[in-house]
Image (cartoon, rainbow, N blue to C red):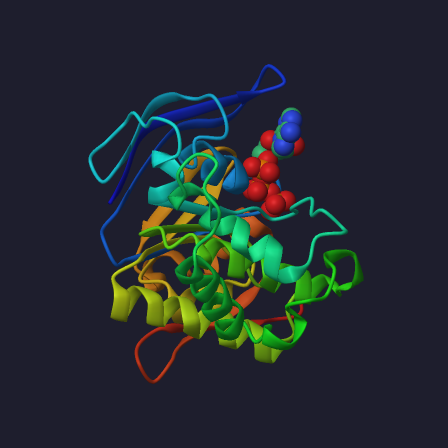
Length: 253
Ligand SMILES: Nc1ncnc2c1ncn2[C@@H]1O[C@H](COP(=O)(O)OP(=O)(O)OP(=O)(O)O)[C@@H](O)[C@H]1O
C-alpha cells in the first residue's frame, strides 16, 4: 500500500532524511520510532505529500495524484495541529469529508452521519457542539483523530496520536486503530514515542535515527536493549511477553 524508496528530504538546506526506504502492506501497522529530531515527522509529512522530497513514494501503486485524490487515499494527523479556536468539534470533524464533496457541494446527511460515528468512536459525542478553543489538549488530539477517521481514507498516517492522552484514552485509540486495520483493512503508520505501545500494537517497527532507517522488522528485532541504548541513550530491560511481543522496562543507570 505504501512504497518508499530512496527518500531524501532537505529542510533549511540541511539533509534531515537520507535515502529512506520502507514498504507497508495493506492492513499492516508500522510504527516509526526514534529519538527526537530523527526525522520521523518529516517522513510522515513527505509520504503525505506535504513536503518536497527526492526519491519515490507510491501509494497503492500510484506516485502522482490530482486535486483531492491524495486526501481520499491518505488521512494525515499532524503532531501539533493548529486548530481554528472558534470552530465546533462537529464542524471540524465534518471537514474530514471535504475530499469526498463535489465543488460547492454541501455535506449530505451521510457525511454528517460519518462525522457523528467518528466522534462516537473517539468518545466525543458529548463534545460535538463545543468550540475547539475550549477543549483540553487530549480532547483536541482526539478531535484531530476523529477528523482523520471521518476522511475514510484507506491509509492513516498519524504523528504521535497518543502523546496528549490519558492512559485509558491511549489504550482506546490504539485498540481502535488495531480494529480498523484488522476488520476494515486500513493501513496504519504511526510515529510513537512510547516504545512499549509500539511493541504491543505494531506488526513492524522502523527505527529512524539521524535521518536514516537504523533497523526495521518485527517488534522483537527492533526493540532490543542494545538498539535502544545505541539510538536513544536509554537503558531498558526487555523481556518476552506472553504473546512473544517484547515488554520494555526502564532501568536506572
Ligand atoms: N519546519 C522545519 N524547518 C526546518 N527544520 C525542521 C523543521 N521541522 C523539523 N526540522 C528539523 O528536521 C529534523 C527532523 O525533524 P522531525 O520533526 O522530522 O523529527 P522527529 O523525529 O519527528 O522528532 P520528535 O521526536 O522530536 O518529534 C530535526 O533536525 C528538526 O530540527
